[in-house]
Length: 206
Image (cartoon, rainbow, N blue to C red; front, top):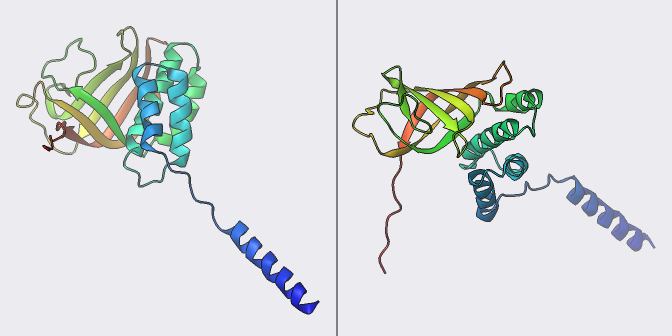
C-alpha cells in the first residue's frame, strides 16, 4: 500500500509540475500571415482586423513580421472606420497600444513631386530627411492615414524616383481625425525612419 501511495504522490507531483509549466505561445504560420495580407489587399477590413489582432497576440516579440502586422491592423481598422463599421472612440482606444512600438510600412513607389499624389513615398516640404505619404483605399475615395516619417538620415529621392520601398521606424503618435470625418481617419507619426528599397527575389537556376 505504501508503494502504491508513493506512486500516486509521484504521479500527482509530475502532473502538477507539468500543469504549472508556462504554455508555449502559438506560432503564426506563413499561411496564416498570408491570410492577413489577402484580407488587407482585398479590403476585407473585418477579417484583416480580426486576424491581425489575433496574430499580434500570438506572435513572439522578435518575430520580424510583427512590425508589418502592426501596420496592417492600423490600416485595416482605419478602413473599418471609413466604412462605418468602427467608431472613432474604439479606433482611438485600440491604437494607443501601438505608440512607441516598431512598425513597417508597405512597399510603395518613390516620387519626387507628390502634390495630390496618393500612395507614394514623397519628400515632405522638399526636405531629404522627411517623408509624407497619403495612404488611401483602392478607389482613393478615403484617406486612411497621412503618414509622416522623420528619417534617420537624408535620402536621395531624385536618384531613386520610381523605385519601390518600404519604411521602418518607431511610432511616435497616432492622431485620429478630431473632426471624426470618415474621409480622413488618422495621422501617423513615425521617427527613426529607414527607407528599405525593394529588391526582387534572386532567380535560382536549376
